[in-house]
Image 1 (spheres, helix red, strand yellow):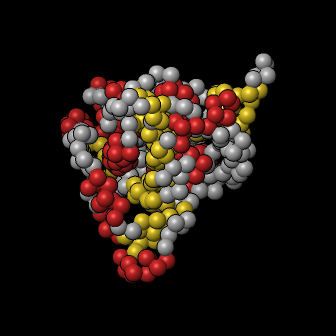
Image 2 (spheres, rainbow, N blue to C red):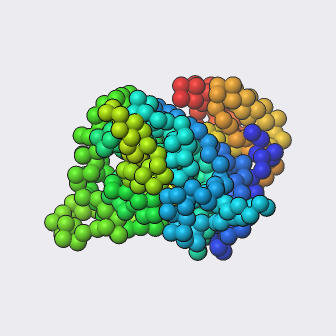
Image 3 (cartoon, helix red, strand yellow):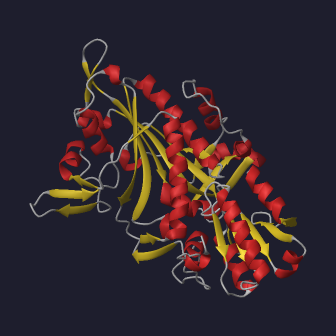
Length: 438
């Protein structure tokens, strides 16, 4: 993509309303623009990151044996009355009446709707277990939306719902999702720490939040220092395994948010205690028969008895992750994207647009890298070098190729690693060979 043709309305100054790093950088780099309080349009740069995160989440859910479907954003109030949550949910729920005076709502979550789908489709234990998920926009009418997409009113979520015959099966599914979440966040360059959590309005007996550490995190977190160096689940994992040992390892050491931390336990840890700020990026729940009993989602058991199905739900905030990654990976110059979620793989900076040798070398690199399967953003604009450097650092692409007349004359360009700041002079062919291997 030529930068001159790309919609990327950057800002030189920090917007007054942006209080945290991710909000500032997402606005300044032209990733988002505010439509109304807590609601944002995703511009091309931001949407590229959002889609990459969404695809990683999708791949890991599919690998774990989940099946994707898509449920609507607008739900009937009747099913929420069945579960007993319509009145209880409060003002965060956006309630709508259609032209026929039917009560509807913009879904803040999907337990009721997926339970309705299940009860109309599955009758027997022979069709269990089932793991169903969708990726969809949701709306919660926050009293004070703030921090950009970190705490907006409209947000993109992945929610998975599990259906099992009994508690033992539900626990195995819970453990499977626990491991899948560790893998998912690791692929985004994040180390997420699972912490025991309250289940909130969703309900349930067993619940973990997954938090990433960041100086600007919304919650204070406390954990044993060894958790930060645990090995992550291996790439070639078999989801038929018993994951209880992995879950036990990650949960046996102390880890708690400020809402659940225990001062007496922390005093025993002494120097092994880590206190930091954290951002919640995922939450998993086992809630048993809370919804299946209320909504009569029954299956025939091996004995022929009709029993309510055991359920759980597993959420990942996809739009929230965009901000979370920025909070965890940035410097004073801008964003530092992990390669797996970067909007482009490489940025090419032509320091002398209009110079025949520079233009020719940059065009050659642009097309050859593209043909090698890499996504390249080429800054060929007639702008000062300082503007080009600042923009490229701000948007945080993992690699920058810098081409100027002097280097081109000597047959070399400069390759910069955005994360480390290291720069190397390399021949054009050496650059091509390096990225062909990647």
